[in-house]
Amino acid sequence: MTEELLKELRKVVAYKKTQLEEQNQRIDRIRELEKDVAVKEYMSLRNLSKCHAMKLELGDGIYYRAFDECKPSGNFSTNGIYVLSYEGKYFRGFRIRSFRQYTDIESFEDRLVSEEYFDMFESEHVILENVDTVDAKKEFLKLAVEKDQEEAVKVMVKKYSKKKESK
Image 1 (cartoon, one colour):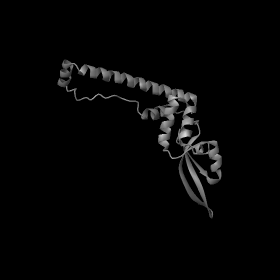
Image 2 (cartoon, rainbow, N blue to C red):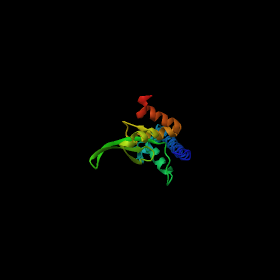
Image 3 (tube, one colour):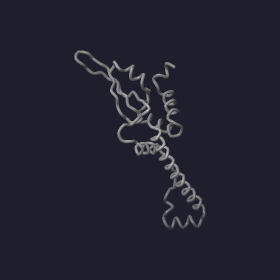
Image 4 (cartoon, rainbow, N blue to C red):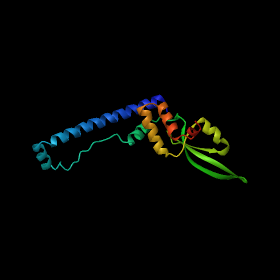
């Protein structure tokens, strides 16, 4: 993902965090006022005591929404992190061939790679295994926003990469 895209994503997340902080301040003020007997009586008369104010938190959905809002049209540059999402076989003539499907965690683009290109594809990209693509995307986006992309890639490689075994 480009630095420009990451900056836009950070702006959207920061804006949403500000909105949540302001809402939480209003909720705290409501709770503070509810301690006053006169206010509590007024609220019960107005039938507002049934409104349950709760703390709001920045949910995972914000990352997806912000990411989609910031996604540029046309070519989408990614960090080349793929999840091995499927392995299978197919017939070609009289031979059985193997293939693997890799899913980019940033764009969800699928790449089908036949067995003769496994090593080449895996040497050029970061391949994650034993992780759900959506979970990997969520984790990567959070890390990229909170820290930076390079750190996010390092954490993902250390945690899920196929190559970590050889290091």
